[in-house]
Each structure stands twice: as structure tokens, then as C-alpha cells.
Length: 244
Image (cartoon, rainbow, N blue to C red; front, top):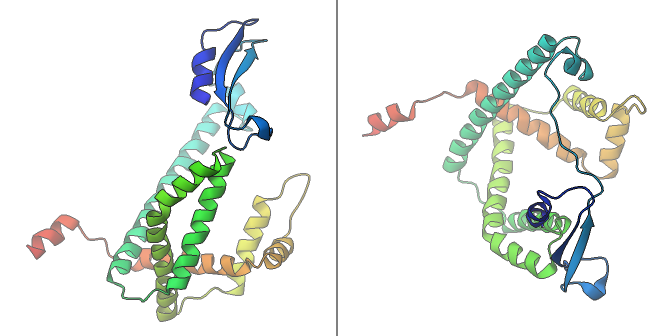
């Protein structure tokens, strides 16, 4: 437990030894001591204090900027871009939510169940990575079933809804759209030591049968953009007054 470690070590000096109780997790590498009580002994060789650097041109140069003002301008631009992105995302989600509420699309139970199981498997893997025991994982999965069911139903509904909107509005993923996305993925994963090409990204996705996922994501992006650009922003208070 990180909090217990922090509480036991705060205020100690270099050269001191701290001993604290511990319960070995169920997935501990030595099976013989799993679940048993024990002790951990920590010897402090050195105590270091984190001191923030001065905010000046030297700091900016360390961040690959010529001056502090250039770094600040870049940060302002990034913050502005992120606010714009989040604003667009909220508009798209609001439009999809309204359409989902009005949609009458029968959902195949098998597809919903498949999505629910995939979500629970991913959740179980995250819990394992956190070091939780098998029994605790089972309990948390049981507690999450209803929420996973609702989430699966929404994802399946949005899948059919996006497909329907795309078909109705004549939206489709062009080869140029796919190529541009592959090039962006390749650039994001390249570095000075290794340059990845769009062809390599395509080959990797094809080998894992995930190229369809990419095309579906691109189609969803086009539908979201269409809804945002063609939707009308309505003041909820005005609507309520009209309905009243």
C-alpha cells in the first residue's frame, strides 16, 4: 500500500531503517507466502528533495524552445487547441445522445453480450495489473456486470446509429482518408532511430484483423463531424419555456 509506505517513511533520515507489516498479495511470485502476514524492512541510503527549476529561458531551452516567451506561446496554443477539441467533442456527444434516445433500433443480444464480455475481460486485466487477488477480482467483476451491460448496449446502439447516419447522408471512408490516417499513425510511432511507414502500419493492422476497426473509427469521425456541423444549438431553458 503506497499510503502506508509514505506514512512510515515521512520524516525519516538517511541511514535509518524502517520496518513495517505487510500482507503478501495473492499473486505474489512466491506461492508459499501468498496471503500471509510478513514484514518489510527499508533502509534509507539517501533522502532527496524535489526542487522545481526556475522558470526562465534556461528552462525553455531545455524544453527545446529558444526563449521562455516562445514556450509560453506554445503552451497557450496547446491549451486553446485542447479546449476547442473538448468543446467539439461535447457537441458531438450531445448530438449522439439525442439521436440515441429517439432511435428505435433492435439490438442483437449476442452482440451486446460479446461487447459486455470484452469490457469485463479488459477490466479484469487492469485489476490483475494492479495486483488484486482472484477473489477480489471476481467480486469487482460481479459488481460491474450491470454497468458493463449498459455500456455494451450503448456501444452497440451507437454502432448501428452511426452506420445508419452514414448510409443516409452518403458518408463513407475514402482510400485517401485511410491512407492519411495510416501516415499519421506511422509518424506518431516513428523516431530518430526508427522510421515507420504507412505500409508497415497497414500490414500490422491487417495481420491482427484490425483494419476494419480503423475504417469504422474513421467513419464514426465523419459522422460526428457531420452532426456537429449540421446540428443546431438549442437553449434548454428556451425549450422548457416553450414546452411549458
